[in-house]
Length: 67
Image (tube, rainbow, N blue to C red; front, side, top):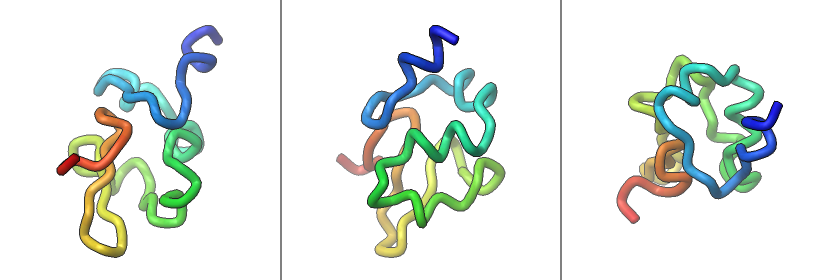
């Protein structure tokens, strides 16, 4: 339960946490502006996914890959 309190939008997670979290938990970590583009856990390549404009959002950085 303590782990869930630390998991928040804007905070990076580890690859281990990514593996442990379910799809719903991961979706809550994505900023609201990008949640519609979250394709689901299975479609995330290396903990990240692409937005409509080709940028890539990463759970491990809690932001864009190229930033």
